[in-house]
Image 1 (cartoon, one colour):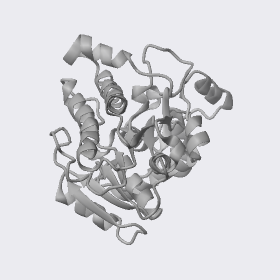
Image 2: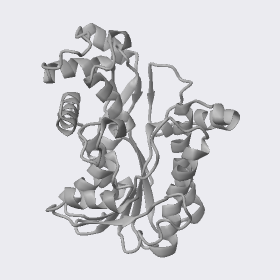
Image 3: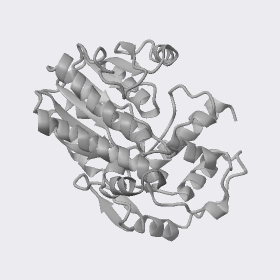
Image 4: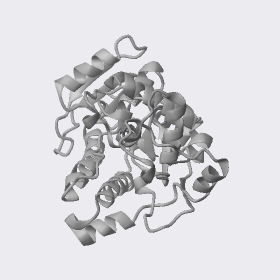
Length: 346
């Protein structure tokens, strides 16, 4: 598939979200025009104001429920490429179907709408997750790559239903949605192709509509709890997560849509392991006025031990194929803390 060039129209679903708003901005900054789907006029107008004066032009279409048949029928018309990013991210669902329906039907729905109303589109990039890669039964240290699939969480949800853990329900929704994404291509053989982006914990500055800390997305809310002193030394070192900067994941979506060799591939955008210990050390360095932060351990051997005992989501393929270069942890955490303090004035 030839590269989608600047000046083309790209559809970004769920455009008002944390990662997707950065993705829209990255497309616009590089001269692509963007049609973003949102659930309300209020969310759409926020983005219109946010992206005023950008190199590319932004417009929005309202899609109130991505799980409805034909939800994207109008939105897909005339676009050259799609970044499908609309999907729930939380661990509070009582019934797994609360997550499964929008994740799976939304993903397949946008593909069906393209097949029906815009079969000449060139490529669809879907926002998946390392949740669809990782196997929670494997203990660290271990490295996951794009060859791995999470079959454990869907099985837990199938066997336990509402009694499955919140994390299993979310992880299963991502795994099943991505499976459905690739199955569509196997079954239908459309003229367009697909790419999956699989980020771990996504961190960095916020630009989307977020009026209170209670409405922060799940990943940033974890950092915010450290920033506000809602955790103590007893919660340290709190390791085990991998992370990526939101701006790097946004760029990965753009590169995946524009580089011909990305077609048919999955890309983990992992920048290595991160712990609560990293949070508090960085906060103490960047914001010395916040004296309520737990004291971290800056010993180099201790930090090496944490890394050596971590699960790794290998993000090197995105660098080799897409040319993605990852920001440093220091830059990600500092910029995130600065944006949160500016947004919530503390």
